[in-house]
Length: 152
Image (cartoon, rainbow, N blue to C red; front, side, top):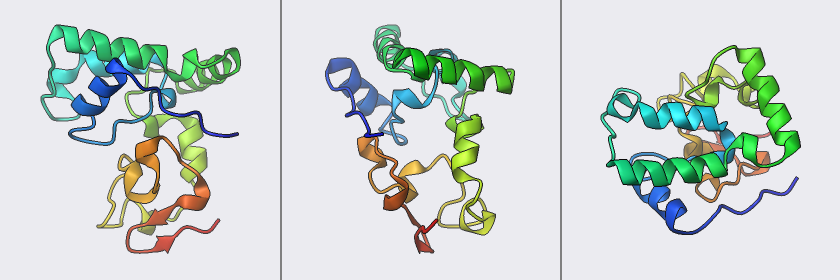
């Protein structure tokens, strides 16, 4: 299926500026709303960093993330995400915790990912996915640092 373009406008710009200043501003469609809510509630300890924002900024960003989250895109995507959450049994804070993510990345050898000193973490989507900053994760446009183009 074709990727939908990133949502643009004031809250999207705010999200990209505030969150994208430290890491890839992950497309909201990659997590359900409950995950975005949990992440924004814990900005004082955001994966070991203090990323607190003022209340108005947090509210605007959370609204944007909720409105564009995985479970708001369509009835089908909501059903799929509900199934993923049920399988997990908890609210994921990371995209990498979701079963669909694991399925998409399970064939890539650990030496190329977690043991790769040029990568080190799956959270760095933009290190391999050449168009991640535009919300595109086409498997044919993957280049793993230190290894080159990924071929399935």
